[in-house]
Length: 83
Image (cartoon, rainbow, N blue to C red; front, side):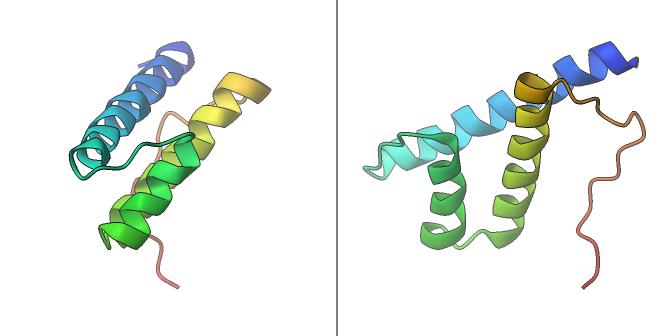
């Protein structure tokens, strides 16, 4: 994996998660106007706090790539850090 392909992979991973979560919301009668609302649906309605944290983290990484030209670390740890 290269720095360039890692950006594409992260974007596609996020889009897949977003579409899946959006579909769950639609099945329950929700319509989302923005990406942040999907995360709040996961956290507040579905009570999926760990999924919300992962979704929100990917959302922020994706926004950094798309809007600010940020890079993604190739060896990226995907776990919840202890408090």
